[in-house]
Length: 482
Ligand SMILES: *Cc1c(COP(=O)(O)O)cnc(C)c1O
Image 1 (tube, helix red, strand yellow):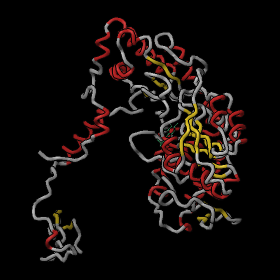
Image 2 (cartoon, rainbow, N blue to C red):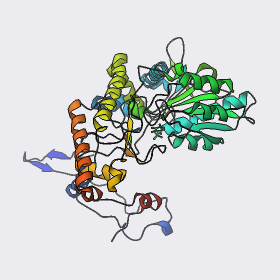
Image 3 (cartoon, protein in one colour):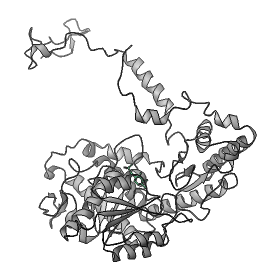
Image 4 (cartoon, rainbow, N blue to C red):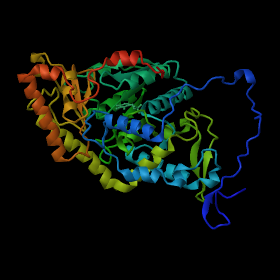
């Protein structure tokens, strides 16, 4: 092997490349008839052109690093960058799931401690970090519910999962995927579960009730202990959709409210940005009596503090994810929890609730608020006042883009017509909330005085309004070359 840089005998530097060791014929395993005969028709560009192309694209996107992003239920809050740095440390990023547990004791310790602290925060006894998203956590949790009923011989009889009409769409989808019939429970005028309707739907065919609390209109189910008692009395279990834990982390615990199973989106509350289809984590916690059904393998620690994978679990629902979940997301969550500590997490909840109520109060001057009571981390407004001028919620959301904000979640939850769901998050300062409120005020004035301006928005983006339904139904996924 020759060196790349060699001093020649005259002492000057010259380049000397090693002889390329390419044989005349290459013995490839691919048979001749399958070999490509023409060039691959992909564009070949210089690095500089490629970098400029992607940089230009990245400037078209809007993220939390650009400004406020009050997308209700999705919790687009700022995640400390240190969490990313820690997750990228070679000891975390460069390990392989096929390595022997002997060589990854630190990683297993981290997962074990994260499970422990999440169990503490949710008031459950055992936790798994396998599920890769909220919906996946629900799947895991409802499979555990079904395994429990099977073990008691009640699976054939208990065929129904109750879901309130305010629930996230993943709840009924999950129940159906696990083979259950979905029975919808109505919300009352106050936006909370209608207790009479719930009572009329309970019976010995109920496997579980899936509930989000605070619910998707941002309200705390104040009757939760009564709901829990009723469901348990009928022999059903209580499932907690903890996709968004921001309003209650460090303040209240699903386990204390009577829930038996819950999932938590690490990518909404614990330092991984939600959205964009990136990796998530939807860990599931259960009360002790459901622990035998948790997915395998579990992480076990022996008396000497040695970690290993537990696989001798006869009643387990089995493996629901390759390897052990999205480890990087777990590292970020662990870092975030250690960074903030218990008091810091509690402050997250308190500030997210304070910010939502401050914004709600400010906006209530210009927009209708269907449930104008103290909310938790998010609240719903509507276009009721602006509708008189023919303005739809979509128009208001599109106009907000021109002011440099990401719009709130719109047309969800379904129980409120023309909903705009704002979740300001705890990471926005009072100044930013005032700016956002002032933009919403300007839009309300425009709706009054020049409604067509609002109907034509946005004006500052490369693409204006697209047919989102068509884009979802008939996506063009193929790259074509002119
Ligand atoms: C986001 C969310 C989910 C689903 O979580 P994913 O990680 O997107 O699958 C479920 N329920 C509620 C209430 C949510 O806000």
